[in-house]
Length: 412
Image 1 (cartoon, rainbow, N blue to C red):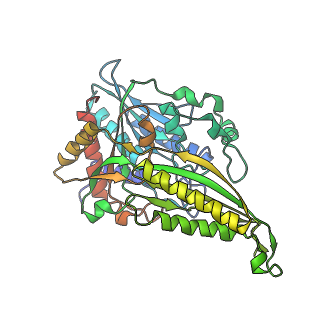
Image 2 (tube, rainbow, N blue to C red; image 1 turned 180 degrees about the vertical axis):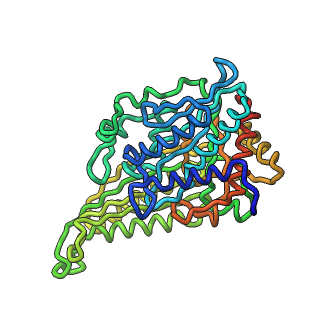
Image 3 (cartoon, rainbow, N blue to C red; image 1 turned 45 degrees about the vertical axis):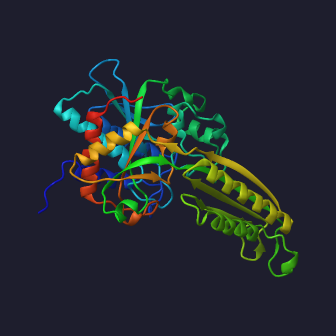
């Protein structure tokens, strides 16, 4: 029989439990301001209390656990990740980065250890933006960069974010009240599965993130003219869906061959949505990212120019709404070194690598220095129910994170 892990056995059971809290019986979906969010946060809050933390739900809806430092004025090391998911999600994306620091605090609490710094563990809301299209609500609120215009975003049922906040029992006018004063949080560290294949390709369990790619997301609406599928000649149609398909292929061409540049059309809807009706409207998303903002913005300008040309040629109207923008965000060199030292202290090698995915850490960079540790995931698969991790990697990652927490010193 294999020996029990110090951390991983309990953590994997907790991650399984969170993976069962879903809006859908057939797959994992847990979105912002839903009963399932509430249930997941209540479960995490219970685990935080068992670990010795004081717990609250802040004004943005984040669940926050605090483990006091040795002194009343101890600086704060903040750890955490998100608890919401994409549709048909895996159960480690985000959630690992909440459960691991809880395990670290529980270990400190069992040993009666108080550090020179306080520890706060945050389960952020709405990192993914699945419900309203506008992500990072929780981390933006804590970082002091929440834009009230986000409250106007609507879900597929027409409910605005502001209305959803009220229905959830929170005051949308007070979201920003949880913003931390500058200088009070010494650093933010996020543990996350890599969501890519680089670590596995290099036979490494853990890596240190150098920077988080900047992303921009848009909602595009193309309006043509619905018509009978059998009577309108091909040359006289104003088919909005075919124009949208052209734009999607343009994105593929433009984002292929440039290092770190990626483009995705993740959602597309044709209206009125009948088999025998030419689509009169198409609505789709555009997500373009790169390791530097100039590369990303140049690609977006080219795509939007091609969108206008396609619609002009096809006699269609179009509109574009930017839903989200983040700059490419470097991790703090001193935090990278601390993370690297903590990993190597486990007797394993590591590497430095960028993150192509967006994370709450990038938003938190507006408040304090940030760092990230990546843990490999099987075949690099994420945002997919096939998402999987190795128990021994979970053990190594949590042990390294605990070493980082214990050795942490504020940086400049």
